[in-house]
Picture 1 (cartoon, rainbow, N blue to C red):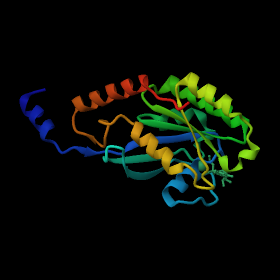
Picture 2 (picture 1 turned 180 degrees about the vertical axis):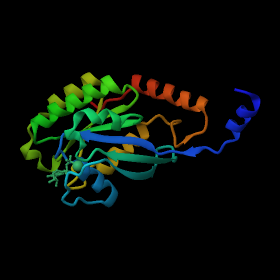
Picture 3 (picture 1 turned 30 degrees about the horizontal axis):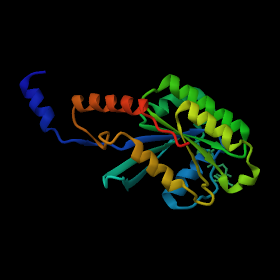
Picture 4 (picture 1 turned 120 degrees about the vertical axis):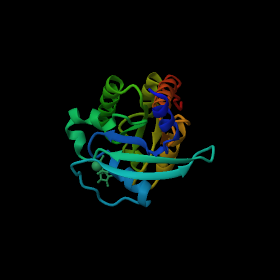
Length: 210
Ligand code: GDP
Ligand code: MG
């Protein structure tokens, strides 16, 4: 790169860019409801729609830094499994949701996680059990889930979109765990490479809760 180009790059205004977070999991586990709950504070009956939808969520992280999450809902597309890797390309975090009352969706979540591990090693993965308001209908033991998340070194969290339990907290945990200098600005190639290194490093140091 010549000097002039170099100078232009360093003086270029940083581009504001949201931190991409993707929510996936089998149909009807409550992905859209979780996002609706986060954005509006309640859930309405949701219909599977074709095409992803984006939502912005801003909050101040533990270091009082403004974090902007660009949350992608794969609404309906999860039925066409092969297109999903396209959605989570470039995601800094992927939230894999299952329904605590439906064992198949836990098996589904494991499959989603395997696929992510094959296709996208750069994203932090979080496992979320939804519908804990109907815990009396629990189909998967806590031990089973914790064993799995421990083995995979993935953080495990629980939510109820219906009762608005832990939903905001989950996104704040995700926002806090995204590598910190992977904030909203990318202004040159060097920065970009640095960010990718940070993601890799963060992945090696993934936390899990139990
Ligand atoms: P998606 O296909 O994963 O996006 O799932 P939806 O958000 O469309 O939800 C599927 C169904 O589960 C809907 O009837 C929701 O009302 C219901 N649902 C979603 N979250 C919860 C929850 O936390 N508790 C209960 N009891 N029902 C929920
Ligand atoms: Mg949906």
